[in-house]
Length: 463
Image (cartoon, rainbow, N blue to C red; front, side, top):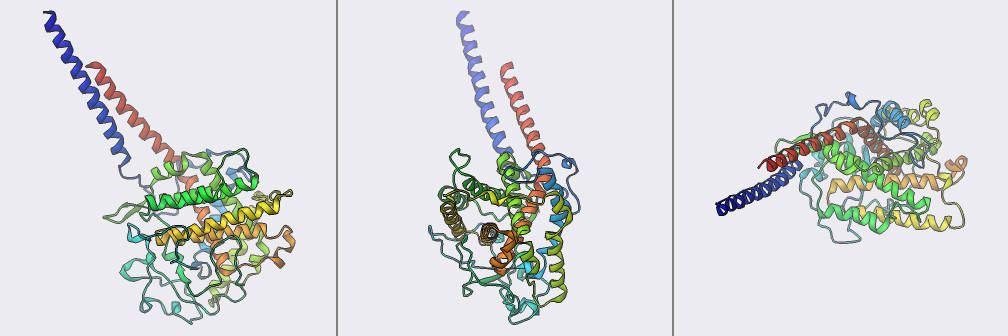
């Protein structure tokens, strides 16, 4: 009888262990399957007039943005009411729509195959027969409409023409903060940014990770670190903020289903790459204010610049939008000094430190030539160039009154600067409006997973 009971006990123990092993496998599979489910698609995708009502008035980040002179609430309010609407119109004008760039460069650090998984990562050139007359060489006008490309994919079109009047009033000087020689026109191509939007391209894996590893490990000071000076922290925060902004762009315009070409918001990616790290959101706001300060500091220069493309109507609109942006009374009243650059480069080490960080940022700009995805390379080079232009403006001269006499900007630098500010503005707006929904979605997912695990464990205990 004792032997029989012992056999039954052994059988129950074996059964219980089978349940434990089976339950463990079930939990692992549940987590794996949950991580591979389709990303959440916002029901308002494509409707720019609607916003997430649940997040309005809720600020996870409060107080003043670190090392800046504005608070989060003010930034969100000014961006939504003033900056974002103006910038959205400005970057669509002919002057700011065309960007000159070297798309095919040898990577100075390692061999790169420039391959990408999706066709959407490439920048395609339309044959000249498909260009509107105003796009063709030696035309004096750049049209604001009639944008098309072969295969019915307007987002893939490229404009490679040179307008003879487009450069009047602009200098051809290099930026000491960036790697590209912008005065070499022989290898440059003209890209219509409106037809090549920054979005998810499928560029990931080892090649993409290597880019950011090179940016951070080789050129960007490790932070936070007590021994870092303010200038080194500033460089780190600028790169981190730009990185966060790019991640937000990918999440906001994501390929949900490649088979049906369905695009939408991937809030899960935004949470995992940005929102769950508070410092990444803080650095996004910091970079936005840093670039905004550069634009406001160069206000007189940018106001007097010639935005001449040969299209009087569009050119007047561009000038009007620039003035609205530079001298908006709400911006001047609420955030007159977004970032105070005067506190940097102090002491005897100032000039040496400036030279060191300038060389580090120049290396970062060179890494952009190693990006394997053509469209990612385009936007990486443009935004790093825009950041380099902001650094050039803020640290080229200490006396703001003499800035207009000393500062020299290329047409391409101004285009990069304003498009960067627009991209940062879009990221800040998307985080503000959709951040709460992304975090709530993550909490709901965690709650469901926890409930599943508890039910499985309870069934094990009962056996």
